[in-house]
Each structure stands twice: as structure tokens, then as C-alpha cells.
Length: 115
Image 1: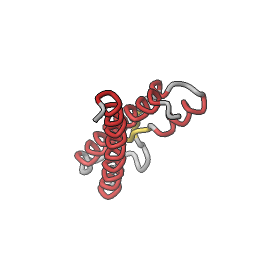
Image 2 (image 1 turned 60 degrees about the vertical axis):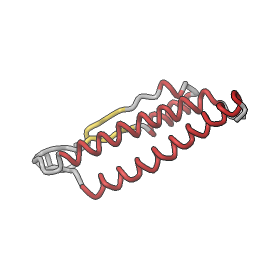
Image 3 (image 1 turned 180 degrees about the horizontal axis):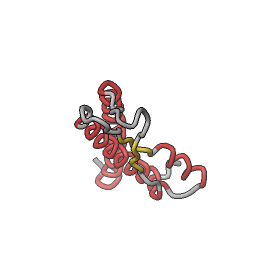
């Protein structure tokens, strides 16, 4: 049996993390030519795994935006190719999550209204 409340909470949290990841990537791309700029990245999967190992509610997972300080202090560490690939991956995951959520609510609609 599927735990719909937990499943819905996970999908909602995933969509929020994907939104934050897309915004961070777009921010990075906008600043790709700024000397000394360090890219931002979103950490979600690690926190999700830790919460699930603890058995804690999925809704307690924190979406963390961090700064990647790799590279020389005065150098920009944004790679346009990597950011574009990350945006494509984010888009695919977003499409998957929205379809999954739509399917869930479509099933509920059928159960309630019989159509």
C-alpha cells in the first residue's frame, strides 16, 4: 500500500528543491563572467537520505543552498556547460514529479466523482 500523505509530502518537497536548484543555476549563469564569483548549489538529496534513515517526516527535510568555494580565491568557478546540464536534469525531474502528482490527483478525482 502506498502512503499517499508521505508520498505527496515527498513530491512537494522535491518540487521545492528543484525550484531552488533551477534558481541557483540561473543565478550562477547570470554571474558567470563576474570575477571571483563562486557558484551556488542546492543540497537536498543528502538531507533527504539522512531524514529517511532517521525515520523522520519528509516534511522536515531542509533545502540548503550553499556556496561552492572550490578553485582559486579570485577565480570564477561557474561552468556554463555544467550549469546547462544541471538545468536539463532539473527540468526532467520536475516534469516527472509534476506528472506523478497529477496522476495522484487524477486518481483522487476519479474516486470522488467517478470519472
